[in-house]
Image (cartoon, rainbow, N blue to C red; front, top):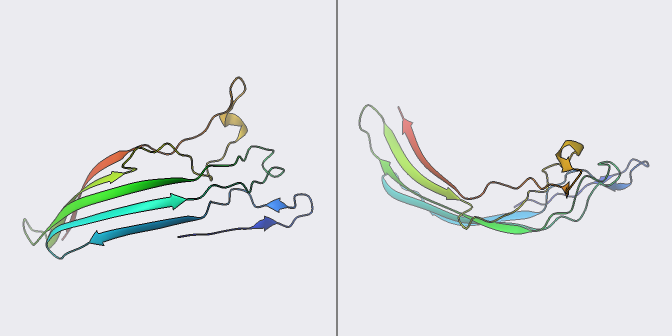
Length: 137
């Protein structure tokens, strides 16, 4: 987990530091083996962030809501073959439940604010699926 908090002590600002990430915690279980099946399951919980640097950011830094995401992996680790000392194949799913969220450190600069509709959130990626092959030679 991480927890950071900082304050801008410059008398022109006297406010929280700009783009300080929300406190977060990742908890999971995994099984790794020299050969055979392996798996990982984890949950990442991030609290909301209401400490914003309004003056420094010209009021573009906005509060963010908390969120939680879940990730899962399953894979198989093979022994030596095909000229490799070892290799593994892993199927990974991040943001398993396709949560809609925004990381606090995604800046809301002027170019990203739509004059007609106000601020436009830059959302984090939705569910992602990946297939990975890793080899040692």
